Length: 469
Image 1: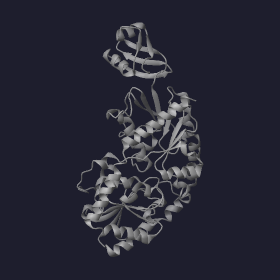
Image 2 (image 1 turned 180 degrees about the vertical axis):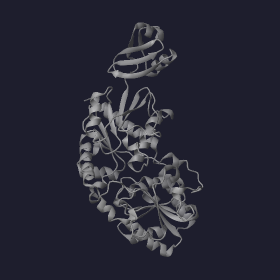
Image 3 (image 1 turned 120 degrees about the vertical axis):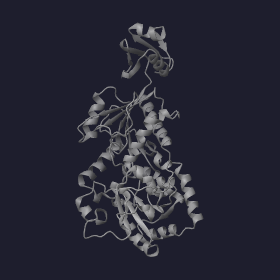
Image 4 (image 1 turned 90 degrees about the vertical axis):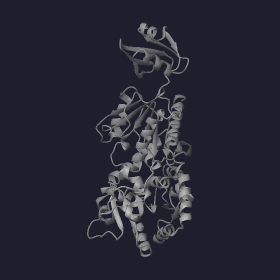
């Protein structure tokens, strides 16, 4: 409700009890305080275009507003955050949810709780580590989950009240139909380049549903300038429709104080009765999939080990589940299928939980990202935040994110990868520290509070544009 608009309650005794008059002109926080002082609370502001529902000890009352209630309801597809082992887009989704819900408690003016409500749509009940429900933050679980964005979610958006003013999809798939403007987040388009490794149905869905989501969106959010150009090139999208919003660095990396790998963990045991804190190691973190270029990394590492026999390569991540069985059979490096033998000095850890990852990253000689394609490269900024040097490909978004704060190499050239690793391992302590300091400065540019504010500004702009026709 905008300042100066008039509100009238029925029965009249309610407004008299609260305000000693039947008409009230003011802003929502004053109304909230008055209701609270009367022993009740506002339980729903936008039951209809101009109705408030209030609980008091004396009963339930309704208020009719002469004007428009200035409450913006934001619908969000939260399914990418609602899984246990989070990587890539799942990290983006969970951090966005936590910061969208939490900004009201940080005094930054990003969200006024009286004016912004959030309704998080899920196909399954929320996991315990998702933000708790509050008056302004609610979950709506609707099933079944199959083809959820194609029919079940659109159906609910049309039939359920209140309808969102704008709908945010934290991944590639926006609802096929919606009674409100849609905003979609595109992490990368790697499936267009590495399609042969995907299950046919998965590739068809990624290709066609992403194209449709981009076409139908009022706004497209992506996480690098590189991605923006890819979307324009592949989907003919107007560049003015695309907003670049960089992700942030999770708090567990910002607040990590070490000592680097100063604890033991079964998940990080090398299998020899020692933890990695006893060793010097290079670290790869990410899902194990074609674009990550692990084959060339292993070849380069075998070259490096001839000169640095004490160094090990630690690979932390799970196999992505959308590959064809034929592809997995042809890639024994990932599946470790016999008779393939893992080369000496290489350790596979599998998925590493969030609480253990900062120590693992901080204890590494360097984090290496040999990818042929990355939409952003979150591990790079996490490593820089932990004071760990970064080695990265000179393709896709990585030069944009790492810049001169790391050592770049040609990911298609095994010798180039090996040379970059050897260069890092040969750095003088002062040169290594200089690289670390530049990385720390760069990492501070990636902040989830900034990310959240930019996303909210985009959502508000979309709503204003839709209201103005």
